[in-house]
Image (cartoon, rainbow, N blue to C red):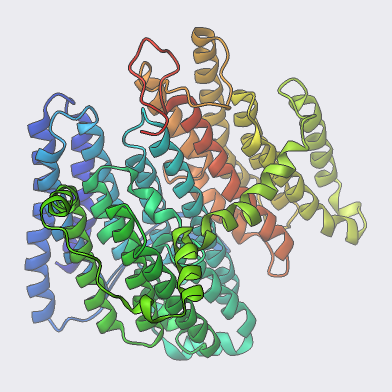
Length: 623
């Protein structure tokens, strides 16, 4: 019976999402009823199951389902897990999503994207459910990817405007860092345990301590990667600047994503993996310092915000920083209570924020009250002014991210002007052919050469995808270079002894199909609209919505989204990177970050934003 309930909790949101896809967009009432009914069934099912679970001893439930892909040294299997952490997040998710869907029925009435909104909310809730019930990192990664894409779609909900689309890409870029951080966690965990370990096995303290004693530095590296993944998703330092920019979406989506559920998933990851890092004192000290620093900076920044949504966003960041401190201190029950309280409060604040703004404006006219003294007024004036300016600039977090991460990549891409659509086949096909010949005669090469070849081809793939990310002239060239990057990564991993041809086909099958389909769609648009470059937003989803959906699916396939074998293929290639090949792992991970960004950037530039043709209504750039 327990297994049936767990399966039902996973299946109900997916069924609701699939049903919402086939409902006509003109039938608002049926769309909203499906969403409310889906989440309502989940909520009442959670109440019944909680009573049943507690009455039967509230023991941990672990269900290993089936292997999606298995080899002698690798097994990608689905695993589901239920304990008190899952229970709290299940109730949070069902109650708050039920509130949001009920609120959105009237808030978005007659909105042009009404169907798109409810599709995405149910899609998000499916990913959220998979995460909280996940029993291993592979299953969690499926839901993690769904959350990232649904977040991008909801921020860019007003897709005919410049700022929502631009900020959606910016947020997706941070999410992508967290995604690949999770892949690296799986890679190192595979080498540490020699299997895809489940969360249930992590509760075995003797097993964990035995492995950590022999590989303490690997354990610390895994813990730091877990922190990067959690910090990126929960907007902790140094990734805090994306959260206020994510508020470009509708108020209900801001409430459910960045006020209540998605923003607390980083804390969920830390609690779920805590049996692994809880005995690493250095990491716990680092986590406490990071949480306190984030809370301090976010609180000061929130106090100077002129937008109510931005103020709520930074207040939420500060509270999650304190939650990270509680988790690091082992106070998990307190952290769960804190998560629930913060989630309900921020949801309420965001839902009433439109009304509060109008109320406060009226209050200033008729009942003005001078500002009272605050704690900042007791500080020396120079320090007070310094803190004010730093907070006003959001502590330059966004500019630092550009200066030290994105701008160096863009500057490198600008130096690759010699790569054009005409010579890409000649230039890289010949390089790839040389690599295949070298691979065939690998055993006859000197040991130092054969050991260096994987890193060389990984670096070539990285250079190619940098060009794809920075290309501004040709959409077809950028799209093709993403595929070339995947080919070079596959070739680099093929030099490792255990990588077999069937695994190579599994990885590249979705990539090749997505490239053929995507190039056909871009060529079709080019015939109708002359030239398509990447120096502007063209908004072709307005006139070509079906092409936009198909092309989005192609881009998600290239980015490794769980709709094609590429998703498992990315984890598969990391399982074949050897324990000591840190350079290969680094450039492969960096390539996967950037090729996902490049694919989403192409989709955004071609299909989102203000429409190119001026005989349509076009939103102002500042809208």
